[in-house]
Image (cartoon, rainbow, N blue to C red; front, side, top):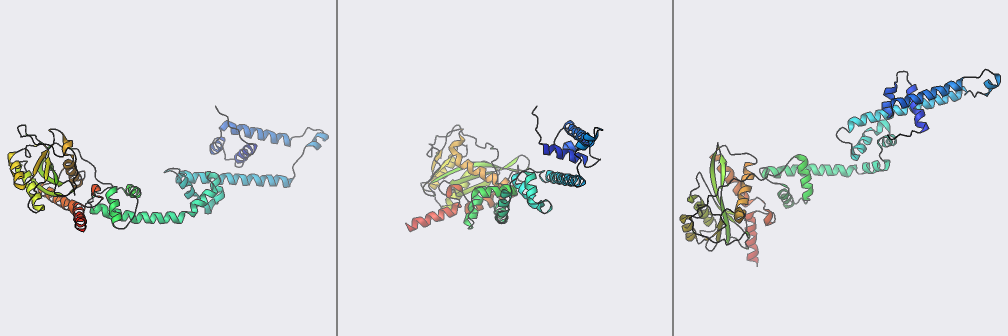
Length: 405
C-alpha cells in the first residue's frame, strides 16, 4: 500500500477542523478530508497529549517557572486563525459539493471554466480556480473568447434552421454532401464538416440503404447479346448510353407494383419509366418508349444495357429496340455488378421514398410518391457525379457549352 505523506500544516488544520465543533465525528471529517479515520484519530490524540503536557507543571517552583504559558493575546490570535481556517475549509467543501452536481454530465475543462464563471460572485475566481485545479490565466482566456463563442452559437443556430428547411424540402432524404451543396448554391459557404456537426447536434441525417430484393428472372433460352459496357457506366454525351432495370414497390400485405427504368449514363437523367402491377414485357417496352419520347421520338444509335431478365431477353423487347434504333447490351447471367448503375438508382429511389418504412399503404400512394420523387430527381435533386447539380441542369449546361464552342 502506498502511504500518503501529509504536511504539518495539513495535520494541524485537520485537527482544528475536528475540534472546532463538538458535533464533528472522526468518520465525517475524515471523509471530507480524504484521510483514514484512524489517521485522524491519531493526530487528534497526539495534539491533545501535547496540549496536556503544555498545560501541566512539575510541582517545583523552578519547573513551574520554566513553563512558557501563552498570553491571552496569543491565544486569541491562534483561535482567530483556526476559525478562519475552518471557515476556508467549509467554503471549499461547499464549492466541491456544488461542483459535484454541476459536473454530473461530465467533468470537462470547459465545464470547469463555466462553473468558475457562474460562481465567481459567491466564491471569487482565485479560490475557485485553486479548488477546481484550473489556471486563472486559462480561465480569463476562455472568458475573453466568450463573445466569439456566442457569435458561433448564433451562427450555428441560423445554419441549423436553414439545414432543417433544406432537409424538409428534400423529404428528409438529403445527407451532408447534398445539403452542403444546397448551402453553397444559396451563397452560404460552409465546410461539410460543420454541416455534419450541426446535423448531428439537431438529430438529422439522410436516408440509408435498404436490403436488396432480387427481381431478375433470367431467360435460359434467350439469344445471346454482348456486353457493350463492360461495367463502364460513363458516357461523354447524353442520349448515347442507357441502363435499365426492374424493381419492386411494396404495397399492402405481400403485394407489389413494379417499376421499369431507363437511365441516361451521361446526365443521370431518368429519361423513361413505367409502373405496373405485373412484370410482363410491356412494362419494360413502355419505359423504353417513354425514353424515346423524352428524346424527341427516337433513340437511334443509343446503347441500352440491362440484365438477363426474361423481359429484356424477349423477342418483343428486341423488336421495340429495332423499331427505336436501340443497340442492345446485356451483362452476364447472375452478376448484379454488370448492371450496378441501374440497381443503384433504384435503391436510391426506394430509400428516399419509403424512408425506412417497409411498404406503402396502397398502389395510389406508391405511384404518387414515385412520380413526385422522379420529377424532383430530374429537375432539382443534386447528384454527386454531376458536381452536385440536377440531371436536367447538367444537360442544359452541356448544351450551352456546346453552343458556345
